[in-house]
Amino acid sequence: MSNLNAEHLTVLLKILVKNTTKINVLEIEEFDYIHEPRLLHALECFIKSQEQLRQFSLISESYATKFHGIISALECQNKSLQEVKIVSCVCNTEFKMLMNCKNLEILRIDDCKNVNVLRASLKTLELTNYSKFYASNIVQILKESGTLLQRLSLVIINGSIQEESLLLETLKSFCPNLTYLKLTNIEVSTQFFELIGNLQKLQFLTLHFFEILDDEPEILVMQFAKLLPLTLQYLDLRNSWFISYIDILLNNCHAPLKYLLIDHFDDEKISKSLTEFCIRKNTLNYMGLNRYSSYSSLDDNIKKELEEYVTMVPHERIIVKC
Image (tube, rainbow, N blue to C red; front, side):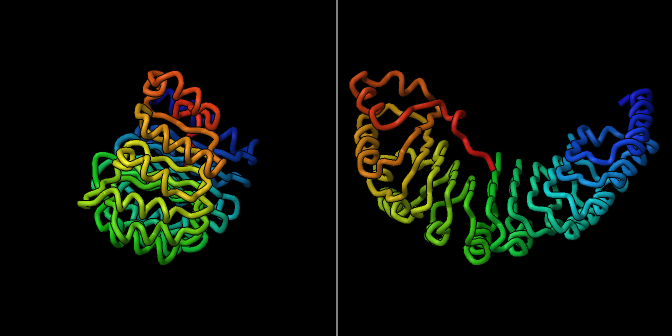
């Protein structure tokens, strides 16, 4: 950021402090490039001047470590702040002020470090990490959220979740009211099944990059299908080993699915299982495909039969995010 731009922004913020106190949403981008002390001070004053700030985003590009009072200033919004998003930051003790935000419901953390310092009681927690991630970093926030937590997304890209057992046990013991759950890179296990069986309010379930390491995967998939709660309406199994056994899953699923997302559709066996599921449950409205072209290449008679029961669409049309 040039000195000229910093000067102009500083002047603008000072004007806003005097004339605008009703800002609802504030997003600060490229925070790690803001170095001008007067601009940082003006930004801090602007945050403190607001009366009803509900959403706040701080977006860095290279792991910002110093926040110059910007995060601490949010404590002035402790009655109005409902959602916080932080991207590529190294969290420090400043972030402990989130504990004092009485109405904070949503926390979105993208590629941040030291997340173990975060404390809050939440309805929605979304965490994306791009390397190996330790479940112990979020156990405390999961426990504090407890039965209040309704939506959880834990996405690990180019890495894996360490301490899986701790994560699954914590979710099972403290967070039974989840209605939305997205997990990646988790091994299918008895403990995972116990968690799914315990989530009796679950409506949206996304499982990506799941591995089935058992010698009898068909039996595991059958058990999983039967455990799916009767509240479940949305199931996203793209990019997971479940797709190899989707026919077994459909044949044993009792959940009233309205939306099913898979990678591709190029097998008559899948077609038969899907048709039977649609007839048996009469709930499935849409099937989203990662590779929609695979459906287009199916035999016309098969497509015609399927289209009597379900609408096939590209997956991006029906994805539900956290």
